[in-house]
Length: 120
Image (cartoon, rainbow, N blue to C red; front, side, top):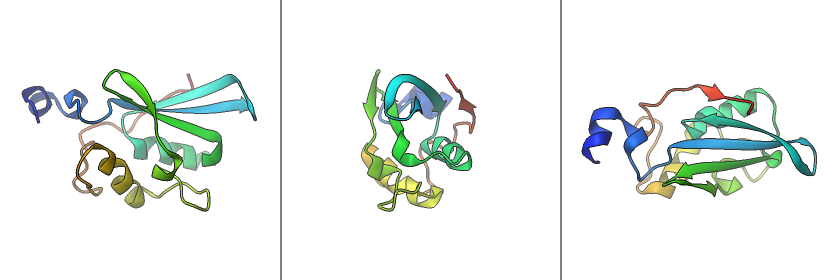
């Protein structure tokens, strides 16, 4: 952890994503009209979509990380049955992408807010 991260929080930690973006097609199978939602934490984003009964199969989630957008594999946030992971199951596959596996109590993103920006 560098000095900026210690002073200002995880937004300055270049080893983990800055933000997450969910993209949803407004018309099924047509990516010409889409809406996006942004959140600082993947669990905030997936919980928001789950509450709105958005099917995870219809969503693409990217992490903004080191200045680029990277697609997150669906198995990091969706069960084999096509349901959203609960928060407690979401932490391990996501944080293991950035180093050691954590749980919700030692989350690298705990200093971030739970707000959603969107639709954009």
